[in-house]
Length: 80
Image (tube, rainbow, N blue to C red; front, side):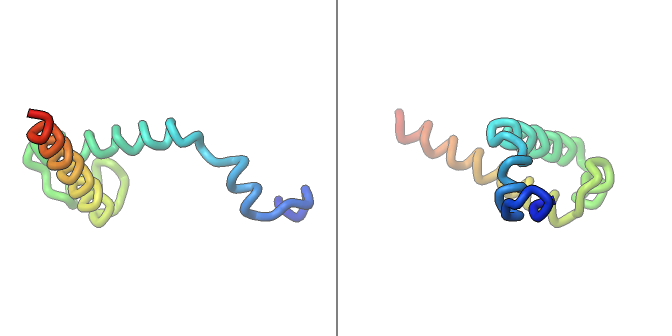
């Protein structure tokens, strides 16, 4: 496609990319879904099957959620 329009592959990817805000909102929703399913007692493999992603992706989502929670807790404690 890039050659057809006389631009680089990078330009095509940049122009067709999802807006950052939409991407971040979708990523947050996916993290929240993974955390909720984990709270229901599902294994990472079960969560992966339910969300249609790999088990490694579930692990990463849960780690990101835990990191975000701990950072939020730290900033709340510092503000006190």
